[in-house]
Length: 587
Ligand code: I6G
Image (tube, rainbow, N blue to C red; front, side, top):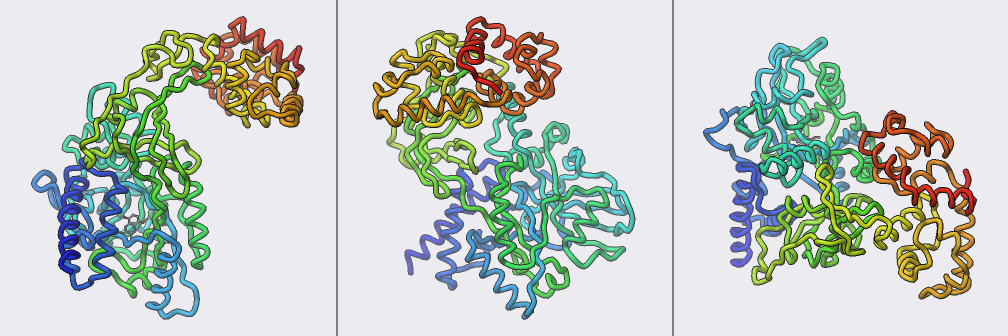
């Protein structure tokens, strides 16, 4: 018992310190996954030993105290509570059961399901339709006055429009930053030597709790309403969803994704669908929020000191985990761009074993301050390639010697010179198609599923074919013989014939796939489709000038330039001729 008490005291001190770093000075020292893990451990110990639970425990507090003395204080007329969380279906079903028991209803309860945005909760006060004050949640009872900063966020109306607006209306919601906005401000910060933010949430928080509104104004912040606070002077509807609809009619931003559910099965379906859509929202969410929709029932159920009992946050499985960076390998892509790839101590994240992560470019390594041997936070979101989010600064294993990462001076594929392309923060091999690594990548791209979709020819086969000198470009694939294929490791007569057959089948394709398969810089499937429908024939594409190319939808100046350069190259034109005239690719 004594040792449990000691662990609880230790965890409380640790978590209070992290909460201060996170909520007050906005400089978290540990990643969110680590914080959540410690909080969960403390919560579990307190549940198992209820006599050791105290009101001042971090598990019982909403979060941040105020950055005292800097912003004016605001008393919340109705406390801005936190949310209880569940992290699996059983946890959710237990919440659902509790609701039914408390309400003693035989019919199903109508629930309102919303996205749980990963931002900062704020309260907006409108008096007679004008925005007069905005504040942070703070400790739930007292927040900070951030009106001047909130006024710089374009999407938040300074004046409400429409009818029946209560004279006094408090609206609550979340301020957050999109992935594209985050990327933009970090690129600018890197260029100007300013502070780099570790994630969109910190960027939003740092931008909002900033003493100079002119700085906030330059930050791409956005906002979404999630609920009603105190109001006076007019009645409001009696359901949560209707309140959100009123907000929308008054010009406030609300999510179109919100849905009503009428059973626990529907809620769980909504949860899984949202998880599938998660990588495509363009902003961070960490779960869904489920609320009893009827405001009268909400009042009946009530709240604890720190969270309403009528709502719960159903969090997604952690998509982040901590592991060690073992090495960084430099890969040469089909256009010669050299990309650092992290080799990791394999780790399971949301059920998938991850051993590699993209690092994009050297700027990313600099931004993260990454060294070989570091413990790093890895995020895996849906089908997207895993990414390194941050370095765990408090590396406990401190007797490990960390090694700096250096960009190779020559191309790792062919030894040619390397050129830095400043506009793209990329490093490129100058060897062109004489670089075997580029040739391999270009051929791999040509055979890939979205390109000519040639089954049975993977990376290892292409590597061997290039290394043996059997192929140098995509057109050579079609000249391969059974003897050449069976001379490769692991290829028998039958597999060789299957490859020949697959190559033959792939000759019938579409103009879009053909353009995409050429692997031109900045020409993805969508731009290839635009080019195909604009030019219709190969000859008109080949003879287009720079102005015509850049007039095509989705083709910017950089893409038009790469396209023209590619199509002007005599070697490329010859490969295209062989593919169409001699191999007989058609669409
Ligand atoms: O912090 C929150 C985020 C999102 C919330 C919330 C929410 O709904 C989508 N809803 C409530 C009721 C509370 N906090 C207290």
